[in-house]
Length: 456
Image (tube, rainbow, N blue to C red; front, side):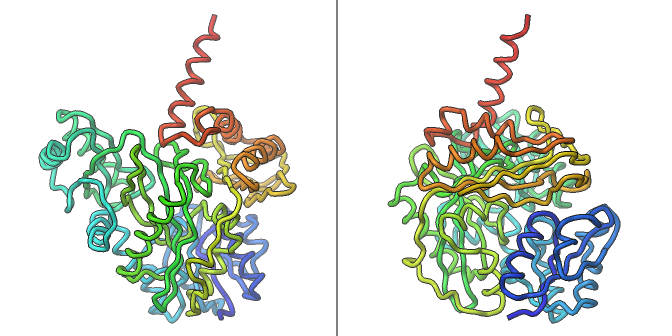
């Protein structure tokens, strides 16, 4: 087992790794920018090293600085968390070449799944169901239009090198394809440095379901059930739950079996998530794979009772999985609310100093956060400041607990999206478990209509 792990990240995920390491008796090293000198992950790690100014490119994305910090402190492993360098195959390779263990999948697997076109090819070869679409990157808007006509409308254009909703456009008519291609490609260049695009059929009422994969270095692979991630705005997730109200035990078993078969063929190792789209007919299709720990991993931990960060560390150290699929039992229901420093109506970022703060608690409530009173939310990074996870014996209890916990949450001095989460918990379709990825748009439209009706 490792003696010291450097966490190449910040915020709540860095704290999450530190907590797992402390319980395992492993020393930790925090890296931070000058803007994060007062951050909690810096305070609670055993050692901390400043690696650059506020800009991510000069600090958390600065590979030489991160590796220098690992070598100076004698870290024998690096945990990348999520975001930043977590899915950077070159960083993983350089880490290993320095004799430091990478806590994650092998670099070649990260590279394979990082390019969406190559990932689709690998998924098809491994037996995962795919939506009709282009098999290679598109050359230009004209080729995109020809492919769209062949697939049938509506279609969705996606960046081959990206994710998170950037470089993504839904197109409903042939005339709009070329312009959408050029716009999406330009967005992809700005976001990922690669304008390559591909196209696939668009599902009008999709549900976003992801399957948690856990695999060791010895060919053993299991899944820890699914998560429902359909509450999202501009392809950015806001609320996740486990298990999905859309899946029957039979469908869960089928999806899990397909996912495990594919991961064995690919030779996957460590933790990862296969993301699927579920259509109105109950058919599911591979969308992409994330070769890292997910933001929403706590809901899986709550319904399985298994610490995924400890699993990551053990597997990276070469230990065998020690679990069979029948050992994984799902119990109860968990919902995660991403608490972002942003306006609950416009979703505009709201950085600044937190002047008052109270974390919700009580039975069945977990609060993973980087925030505290007088903490200054930085404008340089993602707006996520906390994750509120509520667990219950069933979905109804988890929702009731979520309402209560959101009422307890106090964050003053900045705005958060907590009020929006309360709107979701009052929305009939969500309460019934009968919703899709358009739910946020529907809630916003209804709120706008009510505001117009109240106008004199």
